[in-house]
Image (cartoon, rainbow, N blue to C red):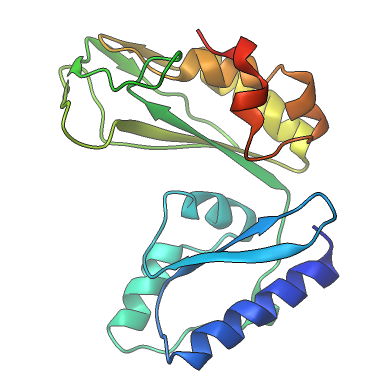
Length: 202
């Protein structure tokens, strides 16, 4: 997305929040069509699972900022302070099978997550953890950062290869296949990506 388009969408977000008197952490969601035009989808007045991507490319802790604003503090920064650096990717490591995404409850026997420069893993999972069948199936959010998209993808391949989870089915094999898929690598992605790439499932 160009800096000009980012500024345009950002101005719409600010105007939308101001029009309803909203003050706090929120996410405005848009869909972008093949012509590059954006269409408003929804507002979520809370932190979202993807907030970690924003944190990696801006260097700011959104949860901390949200808490500070909620307790009455002023934001300690302006929009001009925000500089986007590099590229980040997030893979949701859900306890689901990779064919039809049915949750896979059970006990984790082994559980190891990677670490190192450009890698972030937010998780509550540990060996012996009992994954329930009646709640969200998310086990961990695995993220990688790089100075550009290609380096972030390469780092994610390694991070996925170094992640070990046994005892439940999980989406690591699917994410790993996606990291090698030509349309994903070319950035030719839409909301129909999985429907159009059924060969990745299984």
